[in-house]
Each structure stands twice: as C-alpha cells, then as structure tokens.
Figure 1 (tube, rainbow, N blue to C red):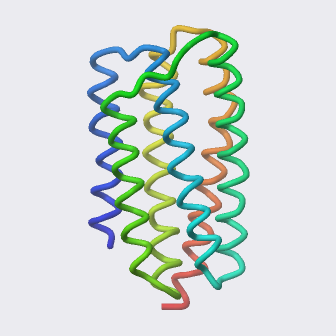
Figure 2: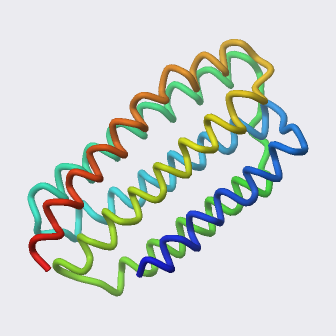
Length: 174
C-alpha cells in the first residue's frame, strides 16, 4: 500500500516540478488548485460513506467541507478575474491519481480501508504543500491568486497534522 501512496504522490510531484521549470500560468494554477481540492473532496466523500471509524469519518467530512470551501473561493476568484482554468499535465496527473486512489479504496474495508485512506491523505497533503510552496505560489502572477494560495496554505498544514495524528491512533489497531 505504501508503494501505491508513493506512486500517487510522485504523480503530483513530478508534473509539479516540471511545471515549475516551465513557469506555469495563472490559468494552469487555477486548474491545479480546483483539481487538487476536487480529488480530496471525492476521497473524503468515499471515506465518509465507507468507514465505520468515527474519527476517520469526522476527518473525511472535514476534508469535504474545507476543500469545498477552498474550491468555492478559488472559483469565485477566477470568475471575477476572468481566468479560465487551463487543464495541464499536473491537473491531469491529479485526476488520474485521484481515480487510482478511489479504485484502491473501493477494494478495501474496515481497518485496512481506514489506514489506506489516512496514509494517502498524509502523502497527498504533503505533496500539495510542496507544490504550493515550490510551484504554485512562486509562479502565480496575479496578486489575488497568490494571496488565496498563501491564505489556504495553513489549512493544508492543519489537514496534514490532523491526518498524521489520526494515523498514529490507527496504528495501534493493526
């Protein structure tokens, strides 16, 4: 399972690193932001529906709520700025990684499901933070888009820490 998480995480890191080298546009950044949030919303919905662990369910519902809020803010901003999100290699890799994760999770149940979901959330949030810090914020040309990325970054850090804490509680059950 760890190798799958790593593969999905690398799927985000490699295109993000390449995008950084190529200097991505604000339209591409907008697509990455919306896609990254949507992928986590879908995983959260799946986890909230499938898990029987109250803490995992609570975390999954938080992911849905928080990432829906970020997407709402991002969509409102790009609409106001008249920026159309542009699909790109990183956003496509995110979609593919999200689909792979959902497929993997659908085959699991019980504690194995909970562990796989939380492990993925840790890897995913770390990779998103790396992309925000190394690619999205540095390459954002629009001050408002950059400000939104800076504003939401602490939520991603909090999600990562929450997932790590949750992982430590799940570890004792296996």
